[in-house]
Image 1 (cartoon, rainbow, N blue to C red):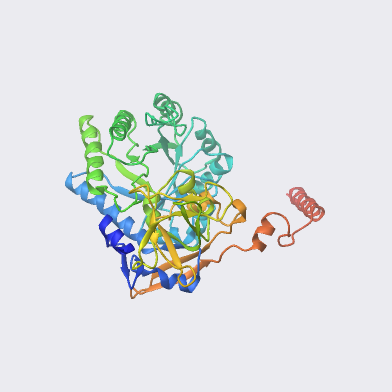
Image 2 (image 1 turned 90 degrees about the horizontal axis):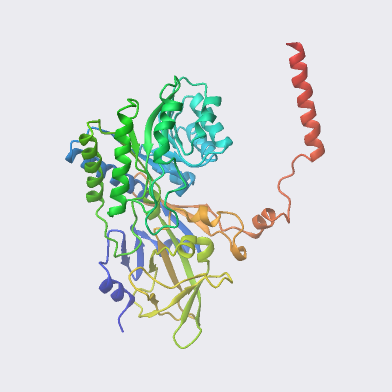
Length: 493
């Protein structure tokens, strides 16, 4: 009977630059995964930091090549979309490569402040502030602008600008406007709920920005949910956006930049085919052609890649802890984790990931279903992107152990699954291991966080108290003393 290696080798182009085997075990970016399993155990999440740098360098090269090919006169700026993964180790790795940041929440701003305190960014770093902004968010952005940070609030609704009129004391505020694009024909809505519709943009500029001594319109923002792909829908929306840019540029000399959002895809199967350079070439060429046709200067181009930046750096490794034959043909490999809580995209969106055995590649294989630990009937994974069948090595449970890995899981899973919180059936958050290289290029690992324990859950659920703090009475007395002190100061003045 053929081995599991034979199956993968015959089905895909294998080995690849990213995946290969050695001594019957899988290597991920030359990282010996069984060594990590033996050191830390499972389940575990893994982040391979050099992959982040690799993707940033790749995207910069793609735009550099395209701009050189078409003699494009604008600049390119790479922003990292923080909502894809807010972890410090991710942002610090990205910022090592001179990237800028895109925020989407008020609570991004304290993180950005901390990065500034740590000298990971400076006040010239672009902060592209997206999202529908509640008062705390606009307050934080106003304070950063007043403190001299290079923040561009991207207006998402017609009233947002009023918050900056009231709170910003800086002489100049550079603004962006997000345009509400039409959704794909098969979507539930015609127009995105995000951004400002095309018919309102000119009036917003004329009434609130054009004659202002404080505000300058510097950027138009474009993004569609399907991401950057070679489809009639994408090119139609990008062209429509660029014609609006040209229309505004003729009456707004300050407008010199566009943000085309994120959406570069990542590899989710071995059959992934995407010509990155050809796609970026066509984007740059289309922007330049439309601008030349309308006799306006080409804009500087910003992107905010999130999944593309961090997605392929991530992996999740499980142990198969049981084999259950539930009828004549349905064999279940039960894992020591949960897809619902630890890979929510696979459950909620039907996202496929690269799934490979970690060990026993010389064993024969069989068709299986993978089952998670929760009692939910949807906690399973039983298809791969290339077929309806899932295969893993046959192993003797009494004498062998089997491990399985899911790859390119680095974006969104922790934030969607609720990192460190309470999840379905109280399945704990797995341990998280960081893999990096030292100055000599040698691999090094460290434990970022251990597996969540029962004490943490009890505290979150209110069964045990947190660190003792002031009682309500003590807090009231402290507030009263503070008010008396303020009154004394006023009286002295």
